[in-house]
Image (cartoon, rainbow, N blue to C red; front, top):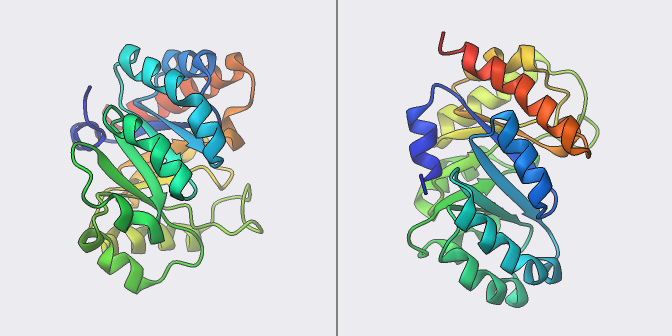
Amino acid sequence: MAKLLNVLNKNTFSLLVELPSVDAVMVEAALAGGADAILFSISDPQELKDSKKEILRLIEEVEVPMGLSVAALDGQAEKSLKEILAEIDFIEVAEESIGKIKKVKGINKLVRLDNSYSMEDLLRLAEEGAELVDAAIMPKSRQQKEMTIGDLQQYISIVISAGLPVIIPTDLAIKPSEVSILWDTGAKAVLLTHKVLGCDPRAVEKNVRQFRIAVDDLSQ
């Protein structure tokens, strides 16, 4: 399986899809739409345990990089992760949890920022073991609002200060026509969340494809 960093380095700009559960039908829809990588977002340790076999099966069958986002790494979650970490391509954790996976070999480590991040946090991410940054910095009051110049300035600051590949999630109401603006910030990818994907497989495939076209246009 290609590593996520390799994909991001190879492409002009990449298209990642975040799914809120481990669902093979939704994975198929995202891939049909043109996703470069899939990220499963799981916040409950029991859900992680119950989904382990399906995650491993999908990793075996799917060619694009597949990752796992976990909200916290408590004891139960860490136990369930052991087998998955041996196969998964990348893992996303909160900034305060990066130390727990720093020594894990063979996977890319993605740190999810939130709106409480500081410049000091950004400057030490690489030292803490992070390899990529998910710039999920929008507070709830800003989510699904139109993107502003101030938002773009924040993304640019993160790109410059972190010194790592930055992924911008669609917490704002980002449209396919704005993909080129995200690329101009220096970010390496956009991460499509359920906020723009929808919950129906047909909608997911359609929405991913619209962003796929916009991403591919950057290479023309």
